[in-house]
Length: 183
Image (tube, rainbow, N blue to C red; front, side):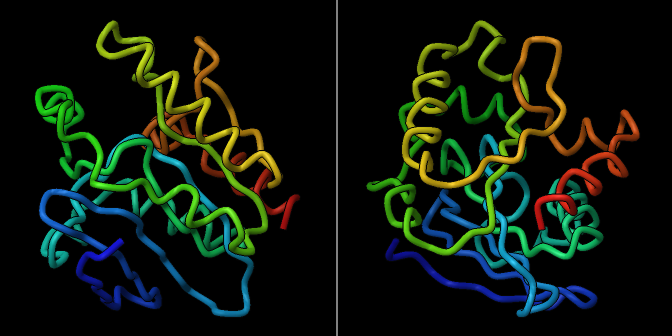
């Protein structure tokens, strides 16, 4: 994606990502190179961007390491939108900058992922950019239609729960079990 590549060690994980200006295109967390990779689709990048000074504060990435580590999977995280901000409201305020010059989705279609999960939350039902978010969700599912989707617990609206919700609702053991069954 023509951005800057970064890699940091955090405990027994190697975390790599690509950032360019206010965008983070992807993040790959590897605990064991022999494990399968899983594609994780989130909403927008949070604390981790640039040189990674906020890596330890990114709660969502920590939850993904915990859950995927227990399921013996390495998560490769992409987002519906590349604009990096810990606040979705900041994304909405800068909506015209939601995407970088090109989208990463097509570049990943042929990578060998064990499966993919969606964990982008309920932002498409907030009354802010709903139709554009729903259109992007359709694009994601269409792009990765040749790959197995692991269906995780949903919000009441039918959207996929965000990892922060997994933690708040004490769903991490159930998520680990679902992921382990597909691994």
